[in-house]
Length: 253
Image (cartoon, rainbow, N blue to C red; front, side, top):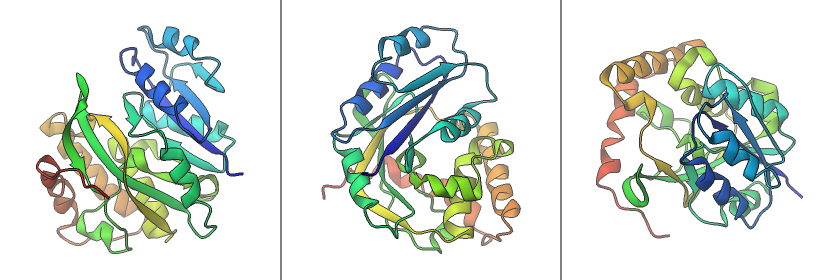
């Protein structure tokens, strides 16, 4: 039976971590859930203690940021399949992990991903943006495409073979990792045409213009360190693709 490990990195997430934990606990497919907390100073640890029976492992210590915490979780994970769920996100339905497990029943599948809804920070029932990921081909990244990272599930073997998140890439670390796995090493990714994750608005890379420019520089570096050359328009197309998320309605499959 395929075991799935879900890794959640947290830092002062007292107000949202409970929803995240409940959404994992409600899954019809059981999993290992690892909570890696970055020495929170609010009530996050108290919430984690309440869920000690559900979370197989959690600990709180200082770290170098969210991707450092994720790397720690990947190292500790025992499952063959690894997913990453942010502390302020939750799965869109109770059958998400069952769907993922069924997808990985095909031994030729190395990774899978699906759609994501951005929801209001103060009202997780209100959909603000809809990210329809769409099918992947090796050319997709050249046109500014990337899969929604919280929906991205990977065989642990890929982390063991190609490494984890590169902390030098800042908020582009997830983009670089997916670029490395899928484009550089041409591992097979399957699209699940379904909303997998509801994500609260408030991403760091888009919070200010300076952050967006910094993210764009790191996106460019992600290509360079993997010896890949984007098209002249690739890195401009990447943020522009997000515009349609504001008016596109969630699809019904």
